[in-house]
Length: 574
Image (cartoon, rainbow, N blue to C red):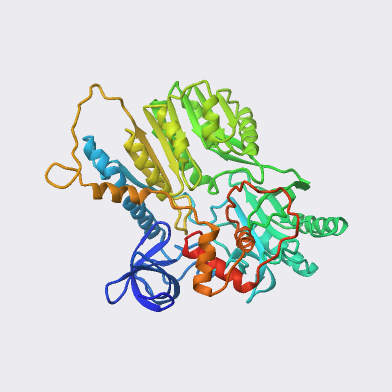
């Protein structure tokens, strides 16, 4: 298998997240995204790692027996959003359940066997459906840009495999008609006004994103236009006034309660709040979950599938049951306090910790609105805040970001020694890594369940109930390492440790060497930084960092941008 070559093969199976294992005629295997089992495909090899190629899908030569005859969404295969819409919902569920099982069983089974527990299959409770299979999302972040096919101004989602090309998704099936009507009205208005979008490489233009949020239970709609400041104030005022009038004339099923304008001059291709003003109404809306009411602002974290969230949180409440009754519960990575307030009825006190100040303030307001006086919310990084909480936990709920829990924070959490904890995860690979550490330190998975919060996509939520009991007595065991009967082979331990070791930091020097080796020219570190900023990548802290640049940034030529991107792909940064 050679880099740059085109091959054909059959997709044997898929693994999380959205990776197909493709078998070639000679028996070799490659990894290709955006495919499903049973398809015959052609793909080009982008890189080769450990003898296995990683490729980009070129064409589906033969459909899978699992595929539907017709796909309900006109944008499927073009938009980069959904990958499983060509499967029946039952097949989607089977694939996701299989992927989680394959990730967690090898991690949990050995520890359960060592401690005489039930098998993994006895504790794995399968997957729970989303109450809605379509039109389930309560939030969408649309991007402004251009498209070769759709003209100089588009508004929607990124085209599959593209950083720049935008697909106008007025027929999107994972949101309801109100989202499409708002999108079309905003796009038509700015097309008529010939308003420029923000160009990511030139850093010029006005329109960046359109954020739309709609509550399932109350029907309230909040709309936020995200722009740069690269326009005169009086011209901006005229544009926003006209936009307000257009939106308020729409005949929507829901009710618009707020129209906002957020300024974002950041180089990152993300929705970043650098100041928000209200154009109409208010800067929040209300949603209801499991009989509780929540006030949500534009940038507050809230599960994107409201009805699915009820299934998820009701399962978490069931897992806590008597274990948290009349005790102190920590809700770590608590967001707007949704889980904390749902668990308040089975606990003496719930303490939520969240790093986003805005979310913490919202959590306090929500608890007050719901008449809950046993909830306390603290702002700050989990690792640091835990040092200052006087109430020790009897039970811990973890709902971290996609990348899981920082090792130092996880160590502090483990040191509390609580008998039970619940771990909620939106990324099974991060969950598997953290479970390995938790089980080494004496915890054991007692119940595992998945909830399909994202129909049509490859994403899935998982919930694990963990228990830890101090031994009644101790037994001293002598372990010998090496080869032979009764000894523990060192190679096996090394391989297991290697599987979960963190990825090394990719330095600018490594990127420079890759570019020079493969393209024959050098690139300055400033060029690398510019490309990373344009892609919204994390910029590592530097001891000589300054608040303001003394000279304007020099934007790299196109060929150097492409070379740097190729290096970032090679090192799996993007």
